[in-house]
Length: 560
Image (tube, rainbow, N blue to C red; front, top):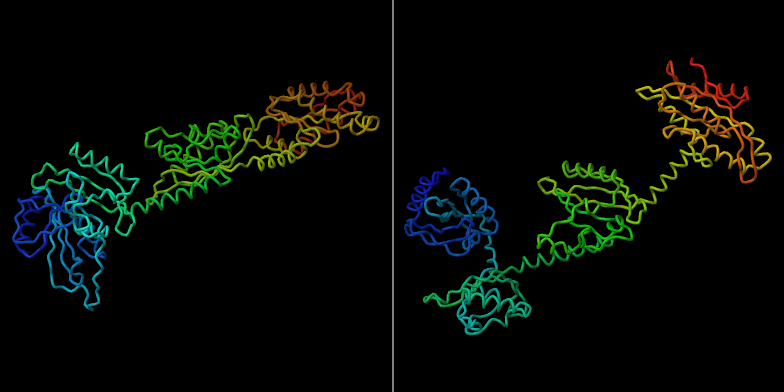
């Protein structure tokens, strides 16, 4: 008979009653919401069925069918009733039908019904009954003096003792010395408060080995029918072994992270620090790195802080030595990682408490749950200061003149080209400078004096120009100044006048004095669009006109 899966409690109860009437040889038990076996309420009428005793129905079936029991259990709670075929441990070669019926609305329990049959579970007859599972739950009773009154077979099986070896004796000596204090405290508490006491401790087996067990003490001394303390024991040795194995792996992970040459940072989705290693603090703070466990870092004592509800350190606090721009870049990258589950790499600049500069590469990787949901991020932080300095030096050499430290020919012409290609097309001017009487300085005072003079010229050109202008050395004693975003040629000529005034006159050098002049040509990008080569050529031609005049005055190239 099938039970309707309607959620109408009255209909489900009627269906259960009909099932019980039809199968008086069935096995029956009540079930609590957590799946454990409880007494069948008297409000449920039985028709000669035997009751199922024990902890749960899942313990009564072969291991291969336990998944079926769990699925039926969940379906019954959703639909009101569910059934399927399973094999019992005591008769694994025969199928039975297991029914779960939700009678909580009418009777306060779920009902488990097992209907035997003669259907063979394996036609070839090669099914072997698996060995019974080792006992994991046991009990014993003790009198007020903590002497054993009785115990069940499961206790004897779990610990290897015969019942006669236990009756009348205290079991305190069977408890690990390190746990005896807690055991005595629990015993005194259950006697004085009459409240159940739970303790996790190690009990010795007869062979001398130790078994971890959760022990619950129930004070029944006031019950005249029982007059004992009931000791319920659950074997948790497998759980403790798993915890010990986990602790060993965690210790290995801690040792590995401590030895790694990179900084490690684990953040949750709220940007709180879950873990960081000491190397990260060295990168962020240098020799002034705070100790682990302070507000700047989290170490293995984090668990203790969590238990005391201490607030976790935020990423902003730990990464406070990053520059403002780097903090903004990192926040943007971290937002993408935590939101989209992507990976990001970002280089950041760090200002150490000592004032020194440092650069680090931060590789952000999302941490995902099996469902794909992001539950944090792990960041590897590598100190790349040396390589960054090497890159900067290469860029400097490729950009600046090694003698005067102003832009070299390629860089200044490249800057001019970018200005002329701008979409808003501002007016750009160039001042072409050629030094007069420079060769005699080299001939009379030497090339070192000539180099010193070129350095002074470059400095004066920068002083005579605006901060937005670019000063470059084309080669030899020729310079080019790019005037950005000027209103017209009048401003360009004023800049050229300042340059002529700065460069025409007497220069004091280490090896003597030198008289210097300058020929200066000016060209602007007013009028029709012009290219870099054309604009420089026009300024060069104007410079030659200035040289012909020989009066250290600038000449403006005509607009084509």
